[in-house]
Length: 615
Image 1 (cartoon, rainbow, N blue to C red):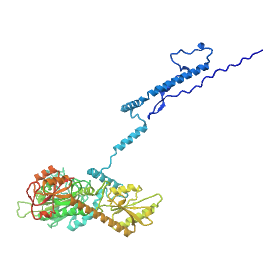
Image 2: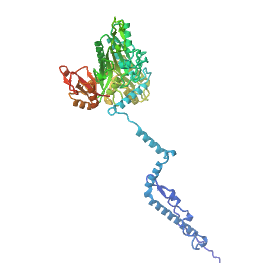
Image 3: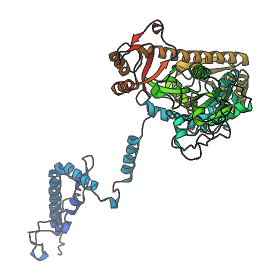
Image 4: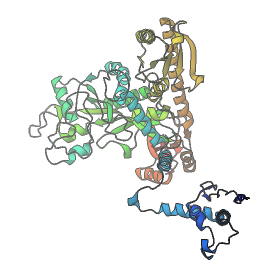
């Protein structure tokens, strides 16, 4: 009988569990796979203690199956992994110090290796630095001179980017056009001829030279030539000066006096605030008597002041300069000073009664003989007058009327009084809109308005910004929806935002021209009224030096009785920072009938003087 042996089923080993992977710290403090943790995992066939002897098949017990031993080794590997994870958990508290240390090490990487940070981090840091280095525009009430420089540069940039051909290279030159239009009839009524002549220089400059060098006051080739700087130029005794020119003209006219001439200058820097040689306009006259030259000098100062008040809307004072501020060689000098805010004064025009000091010193008679040996005929010398409108007038306009957005020009002085801005959209008929804008421009131009169309393919905000920088008083906005009803929007430069916009204005030629002219007239009247009010409230009458010092420190002008000397003027300047600007031609009523006491010397004073700090 054959007995079949039953097959013995081997015992199954327990399921092998997948060992957990050790995780390291992340930037946010979490865990990521750690190379150190993985490296600590022993292989399955060597997951036993290193001190235990290696397993040998010959030493196995016959009752222990190889599968059982494999399961034991797997269990030992799992235990080793758990031990490694526990070790990593115990080290998690030192993750942040280690990260800081690594960051510090990265910060001290030598420069020749470059920036070792990821590109994204480098880009973010660069953008932050650019934002931090960006300089904000200056505010007028915080840094007026920096604001002035930025406002002028912005106006010149807007002028260069303006559409169409520019007849004048700079905006400063363009501002001279309304000035010439106003001054031309006034000068014609006085009797001035538009002809070139050498620019007036101080007499000491003309007499200091010992050689026959080239004169800085040589005759200009045209009335538009650049003004020459008198400083640092050698002028010989044979130089052709203003006195020579007018003496020759007087002789050519048979001795008929006065001889009057004026010329326009084209300065390289139309926005110069401080150079007395940078002129916009200059006039000169030769008279027979000194007193007529004095009257003419005062008349020219008053003419420049009238333009500054009525056209440029500036708060100005006309007066006689003290002896310390008189032109060398002149018998008397007159000035037009503008109040530009913050208690600062800026000279915008000047005129001088030269008497016959120049012509005698230079030996230039206009009639008779200058030879002393003949002794039969007395030489006659001209009594001269010279005046000039400085480029600082334009700077005063910017300082008085401008705001943080840029220039603000009075309508009478603005080269562009209205700018038409078509609002283009994708769905609109651009040709129809352009035709309507041109029709409006022609209607306003016929009414005497200085107007232009800004039809550039730019966003409306960019074109609005350009008109603000140029100081255009009125902006006419015309959109596609305004064509059918025949309306438009008028925006005033002096009133920002929606409050300054007048909507629904008819674009019919007559009605629109009347509305625009009324608005421009109101804006000019308002600007002149503000200037007069600033002058009235900005000048304070004082009767003592203590009051004078308080007024100057308060940012205003002081008007005080004065009978002091040049040394007293210097002392006041040293103690208060204010100089004697002028003795006003229009004296207050309180000085008409008596005397007052000088605020510094204590002497009796018959007139008052203006003290203010220079810009």
